[in-house]
Length: 561
Image 1 (cartoon, rainbow, N blue to C red):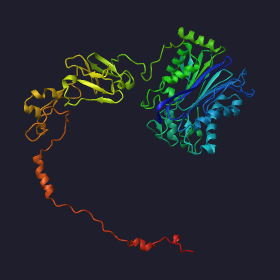
Image 2 (cartoon, rainbow, N blue to C red):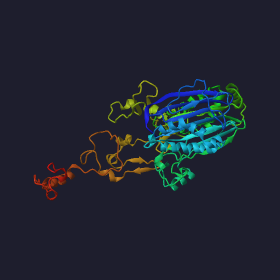
Image 3 (tube, one colour):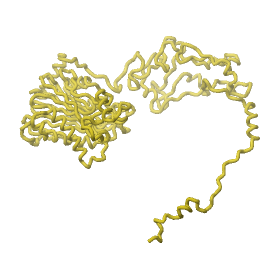
Image 4 (cartoon, one colour):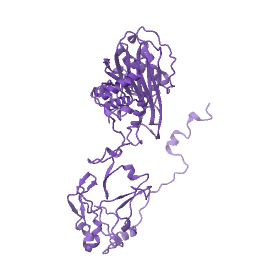
């Protein structure tokens, strides 16, 4: 994972715009936990079609976009193509910003685009953008790169998506998530074959043990084999292209970076968007809610939920106004047309989770938490609620108020009078309770405190034999006679304390007594000290090597002419 902040940056840059009765678009981005924003986007509701008139700036007021991102709605009232792109940077933001501000221009200028061969044009746009970066002196030493997912909706009723990397595009078709791109990971069979053929390797799921994706614009460190074509390099910008023919059952198109897809599946995203539209939410709010749902509650989740986030949702109006389209989607959800959209999607990081989980742990530390047996029965406790702000304090054996507070676990930093500030250890007589050990929940495996009965044992038994329960709880281990020689006091006497030790180390070596150590100490005292190494000073006389070479480098002789 990348470097993270102590607190997330939750400021969102949101834009909502529409074009006639063709598109209604919502987009938003958020920096999140990362130390910088490395995403960019490119949304253009009008690209001149082949032979069409050039774009004319629109009078519509569009919010100022972050650096490296572009949004336009030119030539209002004129039919044309539309382009939507999301670019997720890594190792820096320069490549993502360059791509976000230039790729739409590069695409519209290509001969293949002007001839209507859009699939070829998208491939050329990706590869030529890569070439432009390599040829620009400003990027000679730039190590950054970016993924790219670009959707082109054409006049002839096609949705064409080109993708390099692990950003993703999904089409909501009758409520079903239809994949419009595939994630390019080094562990994919086809990607691994290309990487190894070009001289690279895959280690720890990364290209050469470094890059977590196998296709990207930039990343020229992995494009150094000049005997190979651009498509065959270890990491390539060559996009995978998927085309869908519009048939009026499409509801919306979603493009987003992996900050979203690492947390939610494609179907979950479609469910969230579809349900929110049916509830009357604005597309901008839907994008923001998606990002908030995918934002981790802290930065200790291994990178999940800590990435930059960018979301673009494109409503395919098909001749409807935005309000008519929203009502159409609502009726389809209520009538269960296509996929039965759930009322909600479970929280990712357990913000609203509660209730019992009889199976054990509830989704790790962020789930329902640990199950603790107490006086009130089994309880679900989140780790953070147990530890509080500072940790756990255990009462030592010498505490004078053992009888008063015996069996209680105290939380540092918690309110002593507040509910939940103490956790009672399970009563010994609760035979049917579940107990938590290192193997999970086991029924009837009762923890036993063997020190409680030491006072009632004979003196020899105290020293020699203690019954221990093994990890499984189904057998006992006898320390046997081997521990008879181990004492905590002087020879032949017990410990000076009448209380048992606070802890016992199983398997520790026997400790010799003081008398046994006396002969060894006397031998050490009588031994003569060993002579230490000495170094004789050589004085100021130059060594033989210096005499041979001369006392001064003659090239630096001040008398030399």
